[in-house]
Amino acid sequence: MVKVNGEEKDAAGKTVAEYVESAGFNVARVVVEINETIVPKGKYAETTLRDGDSVEIVCFMGGG
Amino acid sequence: MNDKFTLGGREFTSRFILGSGKYSLSLVQAAIEHAGAQIITLSVRRANTKEQENIMDYIPEGVTLLPNTSGARDAKEAVRIARLARELGCGSFVKIEIMRDTKYLLPDNQETIKATEQLASEGFTVLPYMYPDLNVARDLVKAGAAAVMPLGAPIGSNKGLATADFIQILIDEIELPIIVDAGIGAPSQACRAMEMGAAAIMANTALATSGDVPRMARAFKLAIEAGRQAYLAGLGRVLSRGAAASDPLTGFLH
Image (cartoon, rainbow over all chains, first blue to last red; front, side):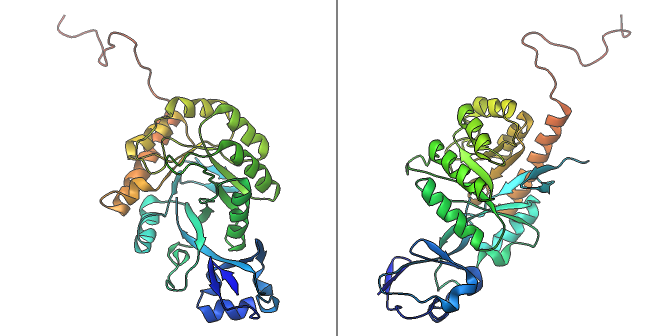
C-alpha cells in the first residue's frame, strides 16, 4: 500500500504519471512529493511508487 | 508619479498585497481587479480529485504569486512547503508563516529566522511574517529577507494596528520594506499604516468577511494610496496645546 495524502491507496507498482492521471488529479496544477522528496515533473513517467511510500500531492489554494 | 517599490528584483506600483483565502474563486478575479493588486498570496494544500477548478485559473497573467507556508510548525516544515510551492512553477517568492500556537496564531520568530536564512540561501525571495520585534527584524535582514512583515494584530481579528508603536520602530530602523500583515480590518487602519511609512499592506480577512469583497478591495486600494501620498507629503504637525488659525489674522473688521 502507498499512503497518498494521508490515505492508504493500492498504488504500489504504478508510476507517478499513471497514478496521478488515473486518480483524476489535475496534473498541470499539482506537485508530487515522495517520502519528503519532490519528484520533478519530467520524472513522473520513470518514477515508480513502492509499497510503504508516503506521497503528498499538493496544489495552490486560496490563502492569506 | 514614479513611486515604485522593489521586491526580489521586481518593481511594483501597487502597495496592496491581496490575500485570496476564505472567499469564493469566482470573486478572486474581481477582487484583484478592484484592488489593483500586483501580488496575491496563496496557500499550499493537499490536492483533491473532486474539485477540478483551481485558483490559478482565476489569477490574471502578470500578477506575482506569493505562496505562504501556513501549516508549518517549524523552520523545517516551512522550507519543505516553500520548495513545494516553487516546484508548482510560479516563481520563487515565499511568505514565511510559522506557528506553534493554534489559539492566537502568533508567528514563531526564532523559527522564522532559521527558515529565512535557509530559503534565502536557496534563492527564494523571502517575506517573513513576524511579531514586531526590532532585534528579530535585524536578524531577518541578516538572514537575507527581502522585506519584513510585522503583524498589526492577531490573524483574522480585524483589530487593526494593535502593535503600531513597534511597527513604527521597524519602519524607522529597518532598511527593508516593512509590509504590515495580519489584523488590518478596515481601510482606515491600512491608511494609517501607510501614513506611518509602511511600504505596503497585506489584507485578506478584512475583505473576506466584508459585505462586498470587490468593493472592499477597492476601498482598501484607495485608502492605501491615500496613506502613501500622505506619507510622501509629510503629515502636518500636531499642537500639544492651543490653536493656530488657518485664516490670515490681519486686515479685517479692526
